[in-house]
Amino acid sequence: MAKRSNGEGTIYKRKDGIWCASRYVPCGNGKFKRKYVYGKTQKSVKEKLKELENYEEPKAQTTTLVGRMLEWMEQYKKNVLKITTYENYLGYIRTHVQGSDIADIPLEKLSTSALQKFYNMKLKGTAQRKQLSRRTVEYLHTIIGSALEQAYKNEMIAKNVNEFTVLPKKEEKEIEPLTIEDLEKVLRVAKETDLYSLILLEVFNGMRKGEILGLQWENVDLEKKVLWVRKNLCRVENNDEEDGRKTKLILLEPKMKKSIREIPLSEEVVKVLKMHKRKQNEQKMLYRDIYQDNGVVFAKADGSFEDPREVLRRFHKILRKAGVRKCRFHDLRHTFASILINEGESMKVIQELLGHSTITTTMDIYSHVTKETKKRSIEILERTVGTKIS
Image 1 (spheres, rainbow, N blue to C red):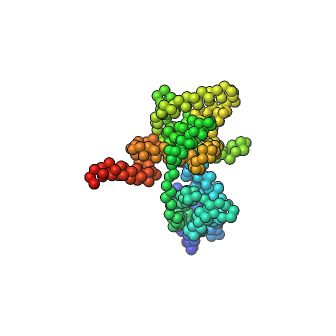
Image 2 (image 1 turned 135 degrees about the vertical axis):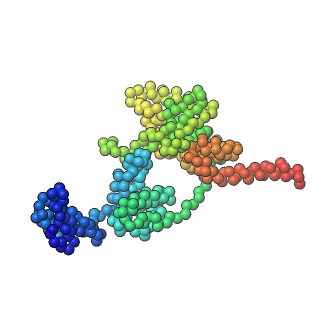
Image 3 (image 1 turned 60 degrees about the horizontal axis):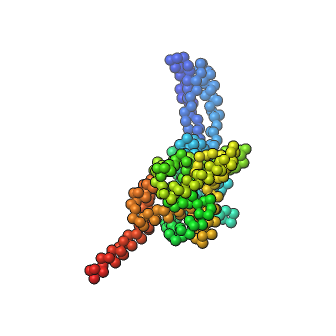
């Protein structure tokens, strides 16, 4: 057997006739690993061991935060997330992380203080960029944290520095449903517009905006007076370079199973929807071959999807004309739920109508409404019973 030098193992011959030896070589981060060499002769193995004396420590590949996040998306999230969630994640990374102060920081040099400064700046805004909502920053915090957690599991970093950052406490914002008086004003003005059937359905059924714009005729039975929420109109990134648009609208199934539900229709809503369908059929005849039949209940004149942003703009125009304060389209959903609560409907029924995943979600959102209802119940009891015992 050949004599061993520093870091060199014994050269020996295996049973199959192959000569073998090993030597410790640098592998990065100041560490060493044993590397084996093989040959048909003892001489060839010695030569290979000699070559290992000049073995250079490989340069560590510098992985930046944004680079790691994009790799994480491709390797771990692409085949797991729904397309809308995946596109949203990518959108947040490209819009808010790429080009930022933390984007090109090497992963191993990223600090809690750098991340904290990043979140604080996003919340406060700068002269160049407007401040982001707390919800958006929370979303960023979750995405960055998840990417770093995977890097930690892969032993790319010693710890997940995102865990030690702090976001300000969430300010509980009470919902602001419309009053019955304001709701009546809105419906009177809306009745003279092409948005009336959509708004009326929202007022009577409390669907999410994406659900109502994604509602298809095949999921509506006007004879049985019922509809089924099975699709959601979503905006996703447009990868068609020839199209020129950054995003596009598509129909997708709701994320949560509870969102897929059956909702009864009132006589008034059925009557209005029948009129709406007749008008839509006339538009189909008018546009003929260029009509884009997506099967949706609420579409543009040519059959293409209604843009949620355009619907909101028209809704705000109706509010102004009605002399009602500016609010979100989503507040019609809150108005629907609040009216049911005030009329004594059970929280379980309201949860199912709204498509909330749990009854806790419903109770948390409408807690102040239930408090007011309970307060009025005590006042009624006091008026009817209290006077008889005083």
